[in-house]
Image (cartoon, rainbow, N blue to C red):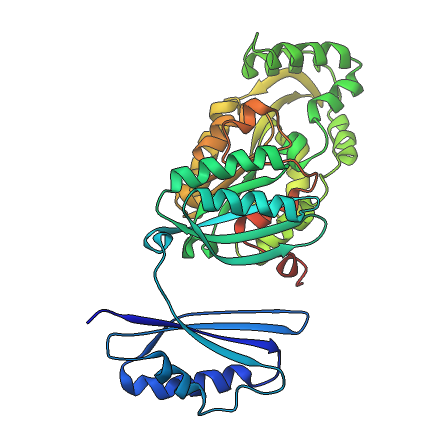
Length: 393
């Protein structure tokens, strides 16, 4: 006998005990082989919508379910209860995806665009969660559909035209498993570029900037550019490193991001093409245990103009991500990488979720998603962490 499925919906002003009354009524059906297959509830400004899906392979009619509800005093004080037989949709055969999108403010027209894209993909939205209303607006949808590639394509197109930062990820318990979150330092965790601050102290800011431009234009690689710039720092006293450290400015939301990750059992890490001598005191302050960065050679209290050991470049950042994942004990698919520059591309590509943070288009093209808002803690929303959880100290 085919399975019969019914949807019971209770709606109206919320009141204490209405859930207990509903489930007590449905327990009457358990003797007839009926079982609960799904439950969802939302309460907005005191208005309740509670839905329960019940299924059975035995003979059960709409009237039987309505009769069971009548055994309890559910319909009163403005609360109503309805029952309808569920007809499976085309999308019910697919698998679930999580769709997260945010912007400074999300209006009805942007939501229309998102839901139209879902409809064009022959998918359906099963749940909507408003993760945050400030400092950005953020929604997470649970979407079910058979053609995930088409769904991603449609949603990415909508994001580019609607001004949304959007990510599409597989649904599952792994979202709340331990994650490793690896951040670039300069212009991601920090508002500053450390080598530029050192160059100012050395009086060679223009020369360093010119070499940086060559690297950005692809005329020289990162390692060569780093060596040339560090050579210009030769003779700087070691004490300058602490002076520069005191001038570093964290990106808005950086402390909140790291503190929340640590409180929820996630592991933050920093991988940088900058210098460990400047970053290590900051990592100690932030209680970040994992750092990969370049080291400056210092002799007799002065910078020699050389870098010690293997340079942490584009490939080195991806290598550090993999090494940290192994040390922490998480698979690569449970890693998140955040960066803004071309030397972050390999790391963003290797991570389970690569996030381009206020990055150029070439970097965004290699990432799973992009953040264009100025708040680094917006990364948390792509992990399904709400503003309420962030602020729950």
